[in-house]
Image 1 (cartoon, one colour):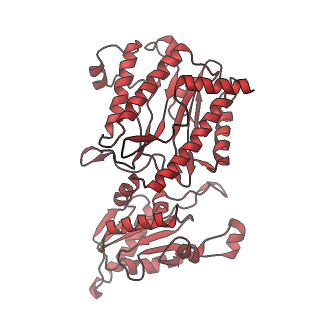
Image 2: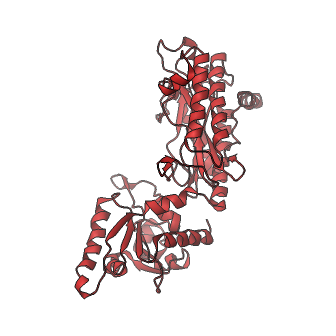
Image 3: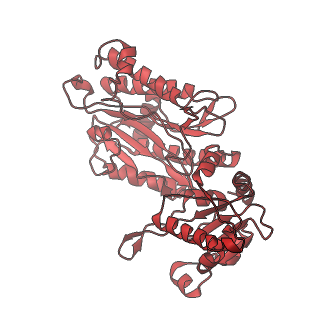
Amino acid sequence: MNATEYKRRRRALLKSIGPEGLAILPAAREAIRNRDVHYPFRQNSDFSYVSGFPEPDAFAVFVPRRKEGEFILFCRPRDAEREQWDGARLGLEGATERFGADQAHPLDALDEILPTLIDGRTRLYYPIGTDAGLDQRVMGWVNRVRAKIRTGAVAPDTFIAIESLLHEQRLRKSRTEAALMRRAARISAQAHRRLMRHCVPGVKELDLEAEFQHACAIAGARFNAYPMIVGGGANACVLHYIANDAVLRDGDLVLIDAGCELDGYASDITRTFPVNGRFSPPQRELYELVLKAQQAAIDKARPGSRWNEPHDAAVRVLTEGLVRLGILSGEVDPLIQEEAYKPYYMHRTGHWLGMDVHDVGAYKHAGAWRVFEPGMVLTVEPGLYMPDTEAVPEPYRKIGIRIEDDVLITEEGNEILSAAAPTQPDEIEALMAGSRQAR
């Protein structure tokens, strides 16, 4: 992401805050995995969105129309001893020279300087209620200003969750963001193709997990956007299955839900394909039903449509198909109203996608489902999960199928960012057959 993009974001945020306001955003903190071992550090998405600053424990403060500077960073100073152990730090110089802060101060100056910045501002924006320690600290700064009211100090009397501003801003992706998400989706789509070529009966779910991670890493995306799901056979019916430790069997399907993160932006793709390279007739029937539902949902993901329309379209197609297959019985409209499909399709058809895999942004606005606008990115992911019960004809039991793509809303309609990973069953079979012939 270039410096111009971050400046544009900060200008928009400062405008939303207004001259009477001040905003505080904390960076993520390092987290202990066990004893002296940390999890790999990942910056807080909101903090990263407006600053790009990659280090932990920092604070970004935004003070509109402050003559001395509107964007102030508090961060760790350079420390030769710690840098010998942990790697280089950006320090105060890096905060201003590389990340555009108007001023930078060491973290140990935060308690001294923050009250002076808050004084005179009537509205305070910060992530209210997300961290009890932060809430206490912010109120400590505010109370220091309140203690000086008789001397003319002005303390905030309105406290607003900063997410109300930032998350609306993040919901609409710029061209730069869309290009980055397109790259992330292509990397993940190529990795899914690699798994289709690699898969044969007898490999482990873990083998496919490792292949995916390797394919993304060598393409420049080191980390997954979320824990990967590789579910063979009945494991595909567990929505958040992450054990990934079973052997893939001849005659089963395997469901793979996996996406890389590239420069802080997520991709999220699911493909389901036959372990042996050929769909059985019952598998193909269910697969083509899910694919038809996905296509109906994608058709509704366009400017002017509302958030609920892709889900409603998918539910109708799935319910009609379940009646046709003898799994449900009755009239389609009453079955939909009764949610009779839910034992087989229990989740929504998508979510926002961006810096977080389940990205920010309200799904309803002013009491109504949100209208799609260009720049919004969502997943479209209908599925069917057939339990091992007498209500399901035996050939369909223990089959789990989900097909998920990343969809960018455009001026003309939509763009499927993840289209490089095949969804048509004939194309999947041809890809898998070609890899077997090459062996």
